Image (tube, rainbow, N blue to C red; front, side, top):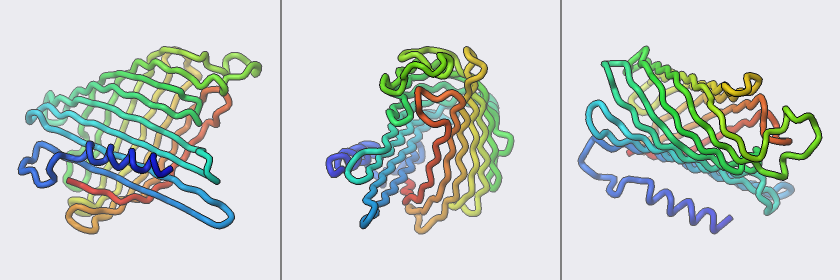
Length: 253
């Protein structure tokens, strides 16, 4: 666990801007860090690091980089591990209309995913442009290549419940996010993402995140969030529903 913490510390330093005092508004960065440790009858440790960086190349083109790492131990044995990264470009066509392209990778052996690699594109529209109320909707498609953890693909049960070890397919993507801003850095947000498998209509993924962020200082905030992920056809013996309850310290630059 200690070596993992040191690794995340190095990633954090790299992910943050080279100089927090850089005098430019083209770079934005938000780092979330949460850590929970319990002792006594139950010894558990959970660490989550999430970094969302954005760079404005022009007044129409923006690049974004998301990193989300979760590590959990119980009694000295790992029982959770989710690692993902995503790169994205947004190009504004009109005042509220934009197109996007993205690509990313996910690894979560405890959900049966040894590796998921995806790329996609779509169209987005800002229904509400703020500053108090913001609502963004997006629609597009992703091309997925997935490699499943072999130990989570026993046989039987029936074949349709067990994905092959390697698979590629196209998923639709429908996304919406609403933000109510109490102040510039304190807000409530709700996002929903629906990913239907266009190859197997029975299969889809639904991800919902509800969050409340409260500013403490100009740079520090507290964020409480609840994330629910439902996978209609999970890999192997993995469960359909995953939830994450998180209380994090947020650094905004």
